Amino acid sequence: MDYKAVIFDFDYTLGDATDAIFAGFRHGFSVMGYPEPDRETVRHTVGMLLEDAYTQLTGDATEQGRAAFRTQFSSVARPMQAAGTPLCEGAEALLHALRAAGVATAVVSTKHTETLESIFAQHGLLDVFSFVIGGDKVRRPKPDPEGLNTAVERLGLVPEQVLYCGDTVIDAGTADNAGTDFCAVLNGTTPAAAFAAFPHVHIAPDLPDLRRFLGL
Image (cartoon, rainbow, N blue to C red; front, side, top):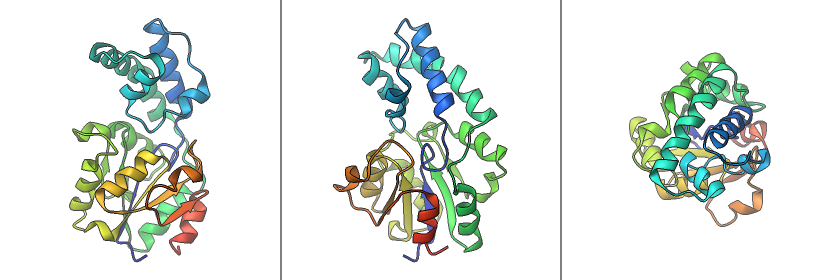
C-alpha cells in the first residue's frame, strides 16, 4: 500500500453539500413546474451526473429540459456551496496527514471545479491538493475514467501507484476502468454490500478509518 497519491471524490467522501444540493433541486423543480422532491430521494442521486439525476426523478430526457434544470439548480446550489459546505469528519486531518507523509492528493468529482475550489478555500485546504478536476473539465463523466486518467497522468504516476476514494458504485467503476485501487467510504447512501461486485482494497466506515488503513 505504498501509494504515491490518493485521489478523492467530493460529495459524501470529503464533504456534505446536501443542504445546497437539495435547495437547488427544490428551486429547479419549482421553476420547471414539478412537485417538490423528497430530500432523501435527492440524496440518493448525489454522485450522478446532475442531468441524469434530473431525468431519473422527472422522466424528462430532453436536452432542453436537462440543460434548463442545470441552469436553475446552479443558480441556487453553487452560491450556497461556496458560502458554506461542511467537510466530513476527519477530512481535514486526513488531508494534512497525507501531505505530511509526502503523499500527493487531488480531487476528481462531477461537481463544478470552481465550486470545489471555493469550498476548499473556505476551509483553508486548497493548497493541500495538487489540483482539482471537476465535471466541467472532462468530456465524459464518471464512471468513464477520463478524469481519473487525467489526474494520474498529471501527477506523473501509473495507476498502480494511486488510490481513488469515493462513496458510490460510480466511483468504484471509475477506479476499475482507470486501473487504480479503490477505497469505498461509507459517508453517503451506498451500503458496503453494493461494492462487493467491484475490486476494492478497503471499505472505510469513515475517514478516520481510512486514515488508519493508510497507516497515517
